[in-house]
Length: 178
Image (cartoon, rainbow, N blue to C red; front, side, top):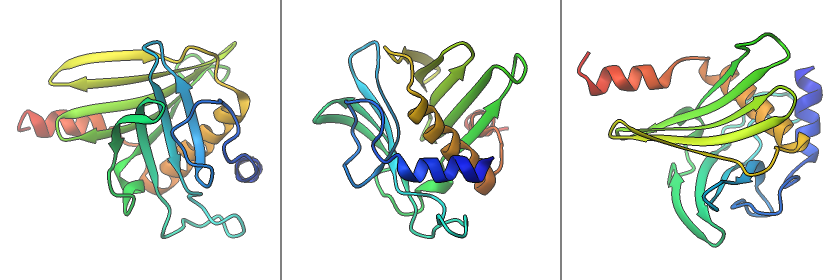
């Protein structure tokens, strides 16, 4: 099943929303216009070799947010080694028919996540917690099936490489000296 999903993802570069911060030669894993009119995107290269499904050494991903042609924040700034800076999680809190796909990262004392929740529809949100103040913004539209598939493949590849951990908990412990 994962191999089929990966193959479908390889075909779907920049398939989905009209607004994205990803360049035409980048994989647009997911992009959406948020309720505050900013666009959030996860852009990068393919993470796994399409023939061997092994991790590519030069693979990278970045989180980008802002208005189109006015990106406000990019993480990480350097593409090199970026895969290790993200965490992917796949939760099923209400059974197999409902899933939560969550991409997380920590930048200094700030915690960020891009989340897709599926049930009857697939919805997305972006959240940030900076200095213990949390803000969340929801994608205006339902997430397309191509984006949902791209994001799922990305999350599974991150889990395969980095494990399914809790980067936020570790960040809290570090921040509080525990």
